[in-house]
Length: 140
Length: 140
DNA sequence: GATTTATAGTTCGTATACAAAGGATTATTA
DNA sequence: TAATAATCCTTTGTATACGAACTATAAATC
Figure 1 (tube, rainbow over the protein chains, first blue to last red):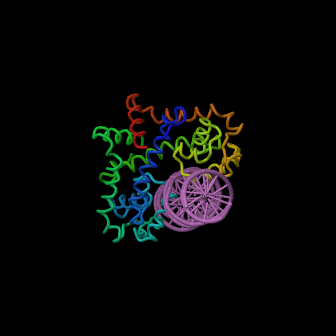
Figure 2 (figure 1 turned 180 degrees about the vertical axis):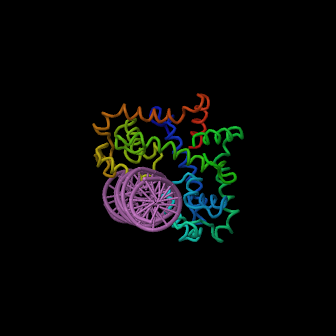
Figure 3 (figure 1 turned 90 degrees about the vertical axis):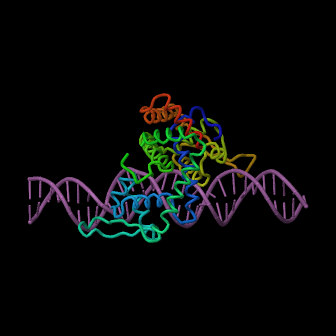
């Protein structure tokens, strides 16, 4: 990291932003060969956890903005990663399912996330890794 | 934080993203009354550190994408936060300066950042704060 | 000194992020 | 049950984020 103004490098917003920027960029590159984005990958993991969730449930679980998610889901339907089915009991609700294409890649895609995680954390001791994750979770 | 699929909550990309999302959102709200965004605030802090920097230098210092920054700087010129001056020695270069409007708010704006930082970190012990910042810096 | 290469910034295309407003539909209540 | 409120989701507008291509200018090399 280059030299920074005054106490800016002490600023959490900055540190978190840049740490995320780097981690996100690395993962994004890993996912490029699948034609998936980080966000889209996250949606798949959410649906694998609970297939048939509504968009609202997914947003709540994964702390995503509903307006943003609307567009993400549309693109994922267009590219064949997920399927939307209208809920028969509630005309407002669309239930979300992963596609065959997605399910066939499930193990590989989860492995990519684990690999990304390993890349990010390998510079730390196991103790530091656990501590960092705990501290970040406390921030959320 | 709500319950999450399998070991997703162990994933650094997710944890960093959501921690940043929350920190960023809080700071953004603080800055709204000034009509500034987080990114624009960061640019001002960079220029206060070294007035007259070029966009390229600013990008390198603050780890920003040049394409993104181009638009940010244009909006900041339009809204009167910064001034661009063509470098007399190099026709490619635009040198950047903070405006009077920005300088008059300098202390308040830096205080806002410090307040944001305090809000984020207050739940941790001093030891945890220092540790978290060190770990994040090591990620950048 | 003409050609090539490198650098500074901009522009374009695509994908988030999120506030705010707008349908559509369901639930609640007077 | 008609009116009101709450939910789900989409749309709109503005601001990043970033790869890729492009323009203008400067530097390097033959």
